[in-house]
Length: 328
Image (cartoon, rainbow, N blue to C red; front, side):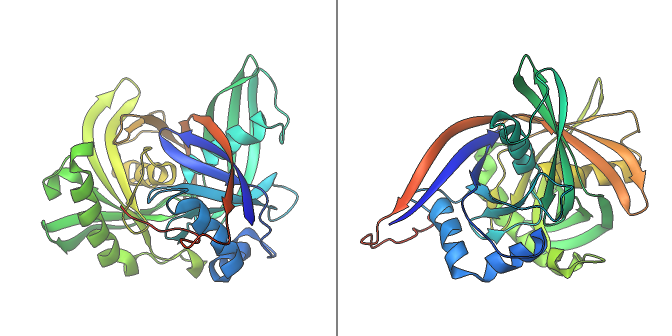
């Protein structure tokens, strides 16, 4: 009987299921991701944990693996119902919280502790802040984010729309939600999924990574609504429709980095300003540009994660449903 233990968190409402017991061969995290994509044995664990009846169509998680070298505390392979992603900001926030709360990374009871994590798109740092021995927030510093293209016209079932493409560890197409006649609210959930899929697949070939072709392709469509400003800077609400029609309940960490690159490039986000980024369920991330690098801007996205449980999932060999199914 297959048995898998997990520790579950949510970051701003988006689930993250952590698995430490799966060994994935490879010389680096990107290599391990390639192996996992082609390994029936490894992928069976992913399927078991994301598919119903143990998961759901929007479940998310990761396999904790060794980092690329001794400079990282660990690495991670992010996964969802359709495969393995190149980046995951909400997962990085959850992993930083877990690393400190589990004692894997010793932390000061009052102050900030850096948790260094190798992900498929590069090395990220989760700065975990504790107050009185309790994690209060996590700000992760991402790989460089940059603009790929602007003003790209896409034909959809809701008419022609204009999209901007940017990279934040993964490639995203950003579209004003008003241009598809919808709002970033739960009542529009199904329609947002449908048109988000159309835009993603229409622009997929536009996303080509300059160094690593394993990162190519549009990961998601971000629908955003400009809410004006708050005391710290711009205020927006967004929803990311990622993979093949999955909906991020959080404001999307890597997507927030991609949005920050666009806003900074437009001059809508100053060096001293903070983006207040809301999700479809009303949760919030705070995002800022902390450095301008040769290959983009370095962003920092802040949020909080909370443990929701621990589980031991099993697969009875007699079970005719096997690793499960997906039914939205």
